[in-house]
Image (cartoon, rainbow, N blue to C red):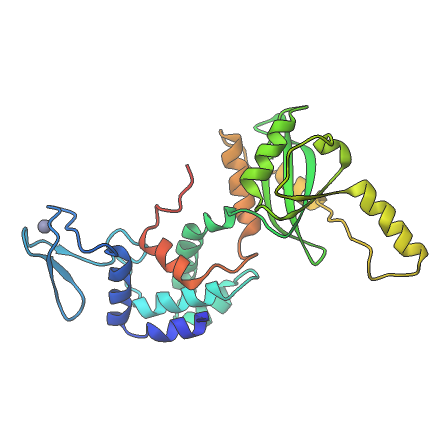
Length: 283
Ligand SMILES: [Zn+2]
């Protein structure tokens, strides 16, 4: 079901509340105060523990908590974001939500962005180019490995990790942690030292691709050459990226902000993260 149809299911406050409750208490109701497992449910889908009688809102602990914005508006925003693969502007978002204040729209957009950062660090897939680069982080030079998806000759999602000089193991770890098996890896020949056990991936060397590109050119075949990505912009941005303590945290933050909206995240996944905002948080 696409996001538009999903959205149509949640047009009333009650439908939204019922949906949130079905995620929140997927394994049955549990009172957060006394852990009793039975509750009265009112017509407006409010829960009252049958033991200690405290009232538990279905939105407590979710990103919807204490919001004065109707839940169907939130759900509309989530459906919209789940259908986008390009950056979402506040103006467009405001229009989709149908709210008067741009501030309200920005608030909601930021809250949803915050819970979305985790999916944006999911493994890269497809064709990925690997680059070694030296950047300065916390005023120290740092060798990093950058993996960038090639999406129609444009930079798709990226992942970056620090690596130690000459440590092929660090490169293998990076590939296994950040890239889906069966993906195509493109890198310089010396990066992998020829002798690495990346059996789950197809590895192509830039040197070979360049040679093939040349052959295509001399054959007059202009469609076939592979276009390498240029990552200067990433390196430049990273050079000026803010200084904080943990190198991997800095790199992850950077990747998340670069990856934002470069891939669709399903409606159900966003709602789940909205109900459990801490579930997706990285350590
Ligand atoms: Zn209770």
